[in-house]
Image 1 (cartoon, rainbow, N blue to C red):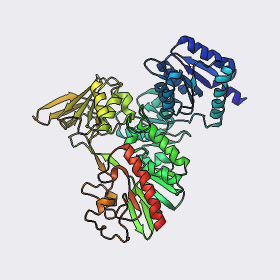
Image 2: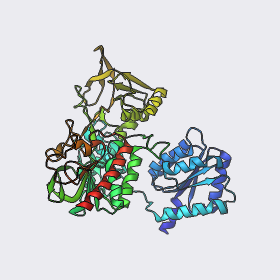
Image 3: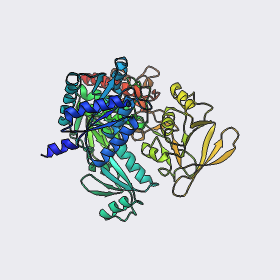
Length: 558
């Protein structure tokens, strides 16, 4: 009886801008499934997304979404990509004409399309119902029930509240945000017995209140793994960006007992990207969060462990074992290690920025703040791809976006396709030769002092939002004394260790270091942390895979 009631609340949605086609699809669906499912139809992608959000708020289930490809303003692929964020478990079907089958095939990569149907679908008994029957069966067998969401109560201009929201968002943990100043936020505070002086308050799905939780406490309470299942592994991957995830996928899929250790959230800087458009296989682009989520699921499917909110503080060599020590004093060991620690954005050396970090000044894209930028003037510091991607994303809702670039142009550090997009965006402007001299505000950012690098002229502008992308520093200080690095802290490997043809000091093997191997045999580096790396997602993933190949070679000869 309960299953029948649940099915009655479950939705099959159809979206088509042609009213006649929309009614015909809905008619055929009701004839077959109307007794067990609610059939919801919409005539535009926007109205369908609004309906999906309302269904989500009410706690209703959506089993299948059918969308027409050729719709104005928002085509079927674009709609399904956004619908994926609202109902990731719903099965996705694209309705398309024969001439658009290539687009449907592309959609398999972009939105994990489950099926595409050619119009017309008559007779439905042969061309529509068998497909839907299979998809509904697959959906019922999956873990389709909505995950109870975590609740976060905080203050709009609270750096710690921003950190918690960013941690949850980047780790794909569903949550709902409540302002401590609003009625529902006050009710949650009262229910938890909190006075609101210490924020944020986080309420877990089982009702446990956490006040000002740190990352390890957060991870432990929202279902993220923090404790290793073993003491010894074939491979420890340190860092969960594209290089680390690539190494975890290839290591686990090739039979190595693999554990990936990440101090905050998988994805690294790439995971914060709103849109990556030059990654192979995604012609319509993919968000960093989507790419990260797929890679993480892929790694765990092959058996890799992923530990979150665990900070590595030391690498020790104990005979043939490589010991990875954590900040709490515990440790794990392995035959081999891949260092994929990536980089972090450099801090802006301008007066007032440190005090306003998280209160209007953000490092990286901080996608959790994007919705609050609607209708506001936004400033971005930086001239590379990450800054350009953030500008294009924020420009969707911001009143204006101003790129502040120290150099003379964007061409030195930004991809050509992004420069073209920025030039065509009506609400994005670029100010070259401009730096931020100071940030002003009491409890949040209110104004910026901008300085012309050539003339020295300064200008005071109103600003509540500043996003900073000004180059990156490697996270490798903890390796000092163990692994050789260059003067900037990037890890040396392979040929960079033997510029004169001789192996590095203390190298005990008869062979020279492999291409991605450090001065410690069995310890490899991949991605942005490596000296002279390409700083691109594709190259980082490739290096992660290549490092695993070299790990195999090392293990065979050990």
